[in-house]
Figure 1 (spheres, rainbow, N blue to C red):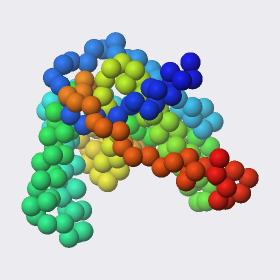
Figure 2 (figure 1 turned 135 degrees about the vertical axis):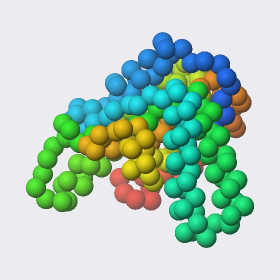
Figure 3 (figure 1 turned 180 degrees about the horizontal axis):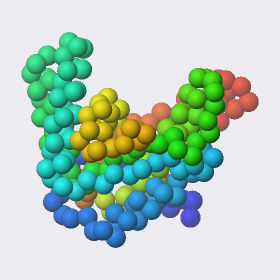
Length: 207
């Protein structure tokens, strides 16, 4: 059982190009259900999932996020040609994905504190909880034979995403998942060895 799960984890890829094959409602339901069953701080389940299938909404969202990204890249001194190429790819990627899921955070149900230190910690706990739901959904999508990719673009333009999708102020857009049947299978990315990242008993001692 563990080996099967580890194989699923190792074989999952971040897929950015999709075929036109439609994703069934049943498969989408199982993916969303996997997100719903993720662990969360205090079991607060501080998430909302916004599913977007409508092409016009996907295109509107993609263009708005690209416009904000263009401004940010301009501030960073990125050349016009490179900005245009990156923006074109981004709009095509989000606009053509069969399904987009906006992963959102809410502090409803999370603990409340009077001091800023613990407020910030509580917010980070909610972020970690949403991230757990995202990972569950990515793995569930792979198990369904679907491809998916996790993007953090909404973090850089929360106001635009909130306005376009009519998201309430108490709900915070955190990430975006594209979803569909993969048009290709990307090669596995390099990974650091366990010796580089695992520390036992004290820092610097590996497995």
